[in-house]
Length: 249
Image 1: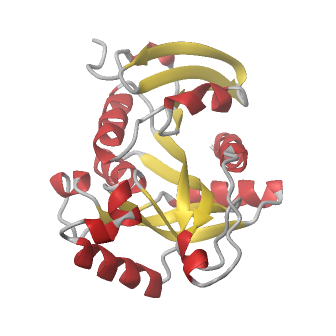
Image 2 (image 1 turned 30 degrees about the vertical axis):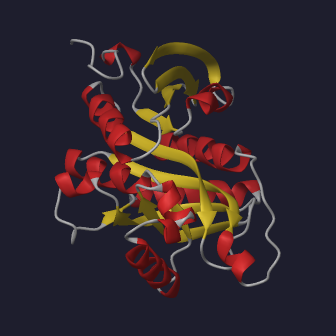
């Protein structure tokens, strides 16, 4: 087949599983947890390494930040043969029991972004694949991590969350944020909705594990707010999940 336009490679990699960080700078770190890791390709925001787990080829490829570049990556990876996608990223906590250093496994995503509206109407839910989600939960348990599983908010604007009063539409941003809190939303991030909806329309499988950096709602509540930039817990959870998926067939 011809090389895909954005990722710039074809189907010769042979990987059915892809681990997707947003940051290109995290790809090599994640790949170091694979057997026989090696650099594969780089184009635009898409840095790609290949390796193996349990004798199967596994890809690690960055998606960049946000829904549009994530959707492009998933579309083109699917064309090259990838069928199972696990996002490993970071998030900010919303629920008060979610603290820095925890991991959040996103069972579903609030579609407060624009990419997925060009796939299906907004009423259609963005949900994770059950087998991948179960494997992520089992992986977190095996590692002895503090984990949470539930709904996350997926947004397009980082500063819309962190500086809503500056935005002309800040009234809407703040009202919806309060609605997400009251409904039990665990955390906020920027790529899961695109991943889930694109995989749903393609017939692929997707899951998402997030490292919690901090929680602004704990600050507002006068609670302690530990901050963590260690992405290892989520990475190790994803690695364990891929091993389990391979074992379970």
